[in-house]
Every structure is written in C-alpha cells, then in structure tokens.
Amino acid sequence: TLWKELASDEGPEAVVALEELAMVLEHRERDYHGAAELCRRALSRLEEDQRLPYGFRRRWQGAFNHRRLRLERKLGRAV
Image (tube, rainbow, N blue to C red):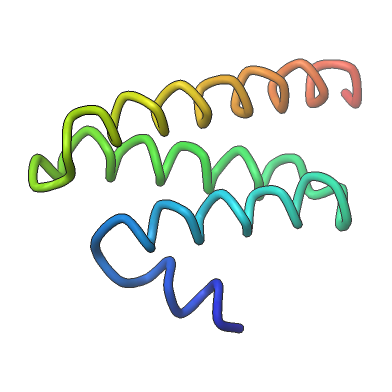
C-alpha cells in the first residue's frame, strides 16, 4: 500500500505513514501488538533522525508515546 511504501522511506512523510498504519492496525484490525511495534519503530526513528526539525520530533514523540501507552493498556486487558 501507499502507507507502507511511505513508511519505509525517510523523512517526515514516513512518520505520518507509520501513524496511519498504526491507526489501521489498532482500530480496524485490532492488531495491538502490530500497532505497538509500529509505534516503537516510529519513536526510534524520531530519536535517531536528527535531520527532522526538533518541534516536529517532539510533537510526534508525544503522539506515539500516547498511542503506545494506550496499546499497552489494551494488551494488558487482552491477556
């Protein structure tokens, strides 16, 4: 899909694509493990890619951390 293609690239578009993919996995497919893995991947990318603007990284780190924590709570209930 387009989102998967964009997620494999570098730059800000990849971060947005990772969020879109995580939303699909979480809300449509109920694949909480897969969505959490995409969040970890995005957070790692945001931490490592210093070419991304600081404000952009901060905003998306907050969003992905929020999603990851929610997914972990859902996974805790599902077990």
